Image 1 (cartoon, helix red, strand yellow):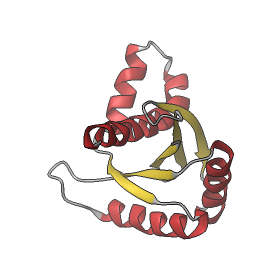
Image 2 (cartoon, one colour):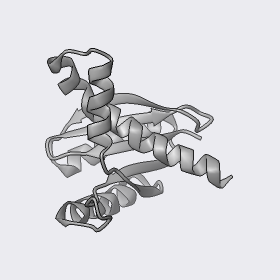
Image 3 (tube, one colour):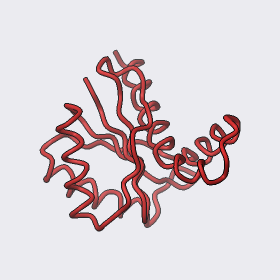
Length: 139
C-alpha cells in the first residue's frame, strides 16, 4: 500500500513516497508552491501516478505538543486536499523533521546548495517513515 508523505512549507512542498509494502519512505520530489489549487492538483496527479492509498501531511506542533497558527493552515490544506483527491489524508507530528533532515544531509556531506534542494523531500520522508513505523507497531 503506497502512501505519500507531505512536508507543507510556505514556498516549497516536500514529497516522499513509500514502497508498496508500506515499510520504507523515500524522498521523491519538491513542489515549488504555485498556490494551493495548483499544488493540490500536482499532489493528486502524483497520487494517481504512484497508486497511493493515503496521504500523510506533517502537522506542525510546538515543542510542548500544543498547536499554533501554522497547524490551522495545515488543517485547512488537508481538508481541501482530501476533498480534491478523494483519498484519506491524515496528519502526523512533524516536530523537528526539518532539523533531522538537515542533520542527515550534513552527515552525508552534501553541499549547502544541494541540502537546500533536498531538505524538504527528506523531511517529508522522515514524516512518512514515522507514520509507517507507527502503523507497523499497530499491526
